[in-house]
Length: 473
Ligand code: GLN
Image (cartoon, rainbow, N blue to C red; front, side, top):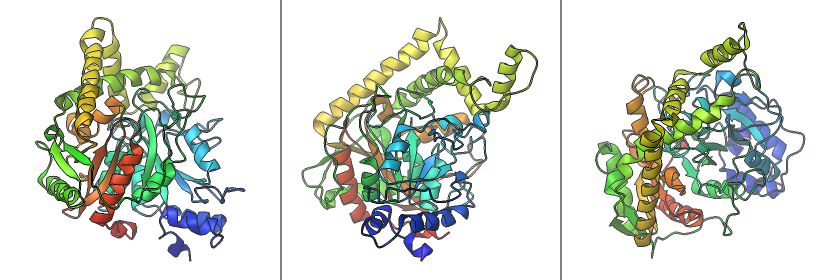
């Protein structure tokens, strides 16, 4: 019974619960049992039992949700993968989690992640790495590595994560699942532990595009507690398209040529052929400033992080070092509580914002950001969507890039331009290279999620990717 219901997609399970064929409490228990067998390190906290009340009549039908540790959840440990927040139990819940719970998706557990969402491999977690269910000697990607691995391994029906420079799309790609980074402002950031506030967005990680659309539809909308959130301008329905007629897809050579490993390029080219088979038109478009995106991102994101992380002082939240006077207590807490990557970012960010360097570093990065947004605007005058590989490589080995931050940063090469421009992008599995999943990214103008999900759905049906081997690993 339990193994059977956990085989269902989230949308199918929701349908059964709403139809009265399955009880939400039973479904929760079946998933709890699956999740408690986690040997990948995907979960940091797991619910002890089903919550007293589940809105099983809601649109999400009582299907439990894995939540990235970055979201505040009332009374439940929320540490954003950091030792400095160990033991912190927030007095309130993030808006998106609250909305999803109300819509019928109770929290199943909190998932592992790179500390403060800084990373591309989950190896920067203060609580240990996560293994990729396709090959346990490899990383799941990051920073939402726990959410991605949990869904791919069948330890959660669906999950949410956050994406600042690729943290939903890249782990989704490396784990063979679907991940959507929404338009900036589509989802409230209230209760998300901040990394880089002008880039951070919450979004779904799911087994397929239908589950993604279903979950996303309940995350969106203006929240009075986040002044950067907006009402979604159109009604979202579940995708049904089976053709791509009338849609044009731009391929930017800057993000699909040099640096993309051969196996990934092969799957990418097969996907372009499929798009044409389905009636879509494939054309080349230029995104001339893409090569500068990584440099701009790795100034802007650390600059914002250095300000956001100033609040962790051992007084207001989580862990506190016991050491002498007040100043040494601050210093000791931050010294012990933050990992190396977080310290690196605080140093880079503080440096980039310091007087004398502000204009030369931060100011210039902002100008590059504007150019990148302009590139996309120009491209979307010619094409409906942009298609690229999600990650230049398939999942890499644990430990392979930990000593080389620059190599690690290049993992985000294809995903960083979109958040800089505030636009939405999805990653769907395109196929396998050497037995490992390859993600295909579709990006569109702000608030084009409906179109992106429709196109992704048509493509998904044609690709027929089978992720079941990872679920039974
Ligand atoms: N890997 C990128 C970084 O380390 C992106 C992280 C993210 O999107 N949160 O900053």
